[in-house]
Image (cartoon, rainbow, N blue to C red; front, side, top):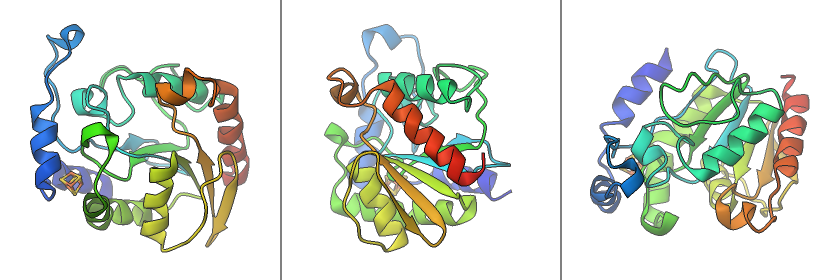
Length: 216
Ligand code: SF4
């Protein structure tokens, strides 16, 4: 399938010098001292045979995807997202901790607009455009989701750039484009979840709206 070929090329990408050097230099946290960090572009994953809903983050986390080698895996954002996915019946487990944790997803494909961890979670404009042009636009075309959930305004910006649309980011609202319904949510990072700005039930509601629209 397109996916295996896509991933084998993706993990060799070195198109953004600043991000290549940053991702490779991330130092293990004391609690992950025994882990072998991934330190490469981080593969998206999900229900490849029935990927009706695409969940799009900004980029992998330094000690999440950049450590485990799977998007939204092994950090607190992943923990929050998977509690919501489990509650909505879209994941068989309420967590995502490693590439061999036995998690399977239903209808869901998880990815990011930028595939390498950026310093301070901020890719430059050029890096954003490069990664979208090299990978994300192609991925979007091949997955062909019926619904997309943008996690945070930079993910939403990336989706707009990939599809060539204009719209404002508005949490828990959606826009329609060529039959695809694009939902917007705050990113499930501790900054938003610890302050109550984004609650599990808010994200579950957005997931349920996407399920209904996509016929999942
Ligand atoms: Fe390649 Fe994207 Fe990583 Fe840049 S951010 S090096 S384009 S995979």
